[in-house]
Image (cartoon, rainbow, N blue to C red; front, side, top):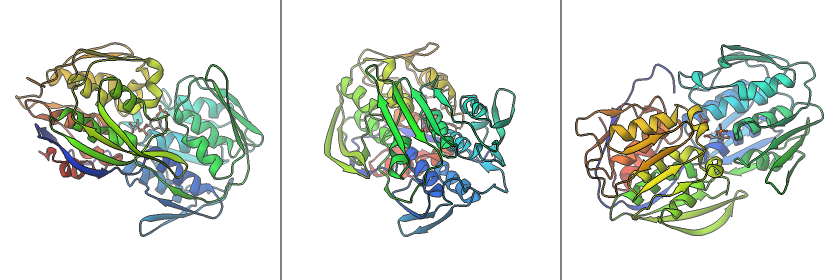
Length: 450
Ligand SMILES: O=C(O)C1=C[C@@H](OP(=O)(O)O)[C@@H](O)[C@H](O)C1
Ligand SMILES: C=C(OP(=O)(O)O)C(=O)O
């Protein structure tokens, strides 16, 4: 999102029985990595099913600015990469818009090169902490110029010979893990990342797929040690991007909440590092049938048949957070319609997303009549299955703070609430799920720009 684009308020109204089959657009995490690794590898990479969200398109532009040649051929994106170690110094500053993944992964990738790179982003991204990536880069010898508190804009310049590091993650973050590994591609010797608890593993899998020399060992406590041999050759690949489970979450929860619904969501990525929401909803008695489990592009995918369900509140353990980190806003909406209380633990990372999601969720729920309590790193929601009194009859709107997941979650809430639920802005939904409005409408959801 550019900072100056106009807001688009939107309203969702009580809907009846959602039905139909929808195909979810490509996974955002895998799409970023496909463009980054394809842009770096020698030879041609063909990507099918790439997400055309703004976050991902910005990553594509950035890779072009560093020498990758990218074109479209029908449904495929074809990339001719620079070859590992051969990125060009960008002549412009790199604008990542709203995307934490894009900026943090590219800081690792390009930051270790012996040239200046300038990283910028929109108002939301400029508030987010970058120290978590800048600290390991500093240890590799990278010079960092950043504003107070390691926020954007940031300028990086790598040393002539960066030093390999052994780095233990202090936050459970796939972005930090990936930044260090991508930096390691241009560092002589072995870069080691130690991950106390597994986060999404797309970078490791895809690096191996592109031919990097990489090993992953997991000990009996679940601690993972990832070792990457630097300065190896990467070779272009064919990549099939599966559907994004974090986007599937919205029609999925909508179908659970709207009485009479029965929908099928096809081609959803089912990596165990991403399915915490499905597991939690099943514990809440959600009727989610997992059909046609298959392998596509080296990942587990499936179709999900989802029917309206009477949900029951649960306690969600802190350890599950990495496997559903982006899904808490919509889980909180599901919890609002469950019988009893739902408690979500281990939510400290929600404060560092496109908005402080923990507080944005609590404020949005309260504005729409839901009883909830926000702790430092937990949220408790007391549900009311019939949605009576939910919504905002006075027309007050949820403040979305440039956060797509807050926007989509509260629109889902409106579909099952007695009164409409409005949001102040829906324009940033295009960062991750440009088809959201059309797809929801095709299922029978009443959502309008207003
Ligand atoms: O690596 C990735 O593709 C992502 C990692 C997660 O962030 P953190 O690494 O900050 O948890 C997630 O929230 C983000 O949407 C995508
Ligand atoms: C947190 C998210 O993305 P990012 O960190 O890439 O901005 C998200 O998509 O919910």
